[in-house]
Amino acid sequence: MQASTMAAADSTKMEGFWSNWKCKAMELLYWRNLKQSGLVFGSLLLLLFSLTQFSVVSVVAYLALATLSATISFRVYKSVLQAVQKTDEGHPFKAYLEVEMSLSHDQMQKYAENTQYYINSTLKELRRLFLVQDLVDSLKFAVLMWLLTYLGALFNGLTLLIMVVVSMFSMPVVYEKYQAQIDQYLGLIRTQVNSVVVKIQEKIPGAKRKAE
Figure 1 (cartoon, rainbow, N blue to C red):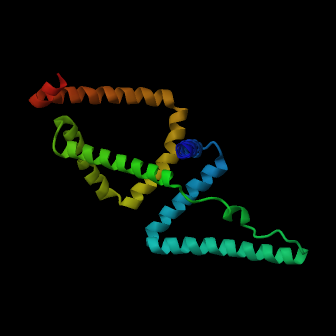
Figure 2 (cartoon, rainbow, N blue to C red):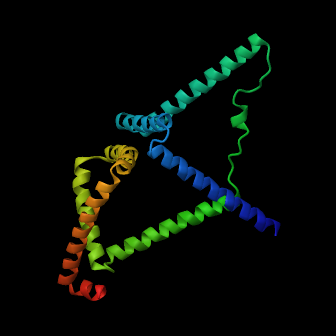
Figure 3 (cartoon, helix red, strand yellow):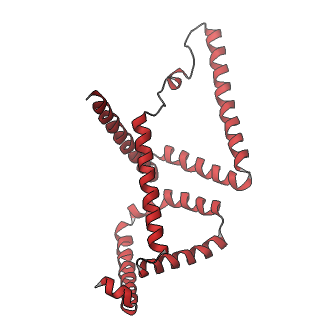
């Protein structure tokens, strides 16, 4: 009984954690706090641009050295300051060192179950598309892959990742500001796409029987 109560409490904490994390992510993407969003956006772009010039190992090593330089300098500064002022404030990072960072067995199991679910869902969807369970969906997937070949010829992976980050921090704000106009255009596009899909289904006997 006690074990089930503790598991339920851990589950509630995890749900609260993910809910809080999602809220913070939305605040960052919608620029609710300009300083925080600007810091995260700038840091991500700096990291990605660094990866375009240096190897991953070099970037990780430079980041670690920069972090260590900052923390060691601050630790030495606080130690000297305490010696001069003859105070005993303790370790400057004591509050962070005491923060609990370990994951419980139930939390690890939940992460593993979620990962397993997404992997199985992805594999099932890929099997459905590649083995042509639905001809129209497989054709859509083929068109998407064909478009990606042209996209891959124009941009490398890091460039696409930079474009994704820029889009993540710009598109939500643009959509929030021009939501009515964007929804109107998206509705027109959706209508046209659905019309094309219906025409394709009418010309493909197998797809037509399934749609009926």
